[in-house]
Image (cartoon, rainbow, N blue to C red; front, side, top):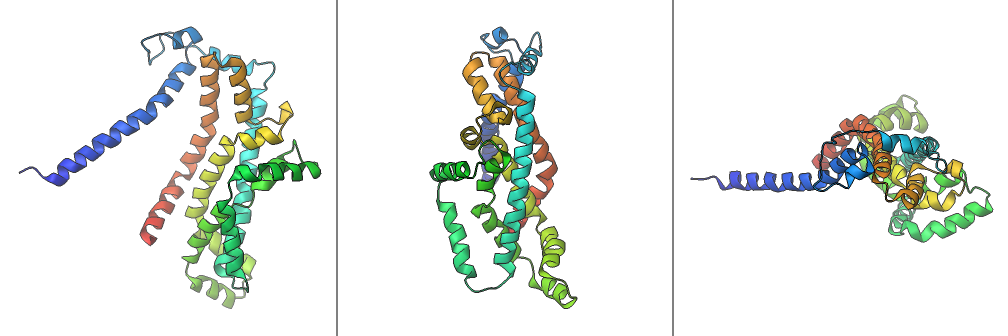
Length: 277
């Protein structure tokens, strides 16, 4: 007699394999197209392995006169690292206060933080822009990063994780004369590493892929991030697929690197979250 569970499992894996295959096809086409000439890309049927591999697309990117691709790449790296670091530092401190430090009005303040999660980011873009303009912070990293440092979702996730840390650690540290700042840096932060690294990955991806806000704030070419530069390239070289695919492939390399370094902690955080849930 055929085991029903075994059949269901086989069907489940087949469906997953089909979905994974469909998801990865555009990515494989992008890699293949980046090493082809523009004429070879438009050949039907598609040849997945280039017959005459070329780096023409990559050389064209570096030779653009109106877009400094390397400068945009550097700007994106700086923007993503600074924004992610600022978010983690500020949100982890806020989460620690909400999770471990009792004070009057704490719950009301936390509800106000949660309320910010209900406001779409596009709604506050114009007010943020006008505020930054009055502060003369347009076309600067400070203006680019400042409005996004306080993320209600990050505070909520870190607070929930820190609440799960046994208060006995803090009580033992207090008995030994440790301050709140010392307890935060030496006890809470190390124990919260899985949640923090998960948010580092999400924060870096969000910053790296951010397009609309940098497009609004940055008008100088020298300040453009990579996504803005790719957007400009798309309007000028939309028919030059080999150039666009080369730029797109380069743009995902940093995200892959960050994912490789944070993968262990992200999986650990997801596992712990599932066990606690």
